[in-house]
Length: 470
Ligand code: ARG
Image 1 (cartoon, helix red, strand yellow):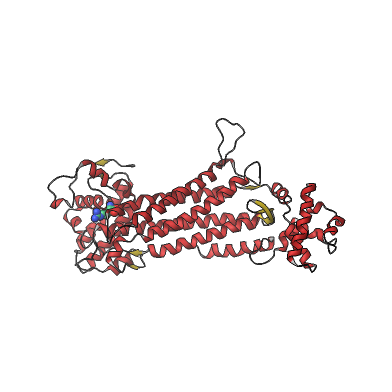
Image 2 (cartoon, helix red, strand yellow):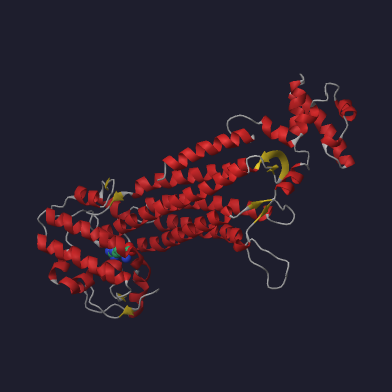
């Protein structure tokens, strides 16, 4: 129970058919108000729209509707000022607010719960809340993409070894590497947008499970709340949590991306790589080893992906054996979602800040790219250009590399004469091909690592970032 104190024993709205009071421990065990009070704003928003619709349909009088709307506004203010006593016996955010409303405005408050149930109410609240959070998360993704694009432009010509199997493979530009991360985030942005379409469907009006006998207008309520449409089947509407799972799946993939980025930053900032320097503001020291500067932020981000993956599995497991329609199990959907949202929003913010303060050690990257025969493929391509078949060229270059390994030198350290022993077609022009700059510049096609292509990718990205904010 955070923030607010809980009061005891308040009359339960459903107590009519009960003879004995709820066991005190059961009361606390089954209550959700400790965490679902977080939904208060969306609960009130949903109730106000519902009241307006009821009045338009002649189910509530205009004065009752007005009293409800104003009363809920006052309750919202009280909650925001910390002047609201949440009650555990009242179970959840819905009954707490409803009881407070009745205390505030009298009998009209009791009429609000006409033609609805907590089952459609809670499903509506979560969707309203999650829709808003998805927009925040997508904006945070956009911000991080913006930082990466800036870095990519600044380091369009910076060369580092690209890796496969974590072995130096071919030279790439740092800008190209940043834009790879940009692309991953672009897919995350799209996935979240796609999930948002299915979040944005309104359960309200499904009532407990079967709909209601009042002449409600669900299209009216949906329009007021900015939902795309009312859910088309009342049983599905109250029991569906697919939208939560889809969101969590998109969140898990995004977290996996942040974890991979983090892993690279951890490697790159080590003394062994030394490619980048993380700002002191994002690192901590060791209490015993004075020399240490630990990349805590990326390590923690890598670690936090674990809880997001766990929540996805929790939600899938939560749903797998539920018969239609609503079951109390569903109350367990909230904490995983809350934690995913908090983890992602915090993680995306700190990641963008950290990347904005990143420094590249260009000389170290370059020195590393010069090791490990990263231009061997370029030599093979050169031989193909001179008429050899790629397989033969591969074999020849392999032998030249073996000589380099034996002598502990790079291909560029071999003389023309030595190189020509492997193939007589090799000429003076080979040395231009073997340079790092020549290698990256040669990969000058759409999606390639050449600085010119990085700049083109940056320009395309800027257009996307400017035009598709959400
Ligand atoms: N606190 C409940 C939840 O989170 C609200 C819905 C309760 N409905 C019910 N029939 N008990 O799911």
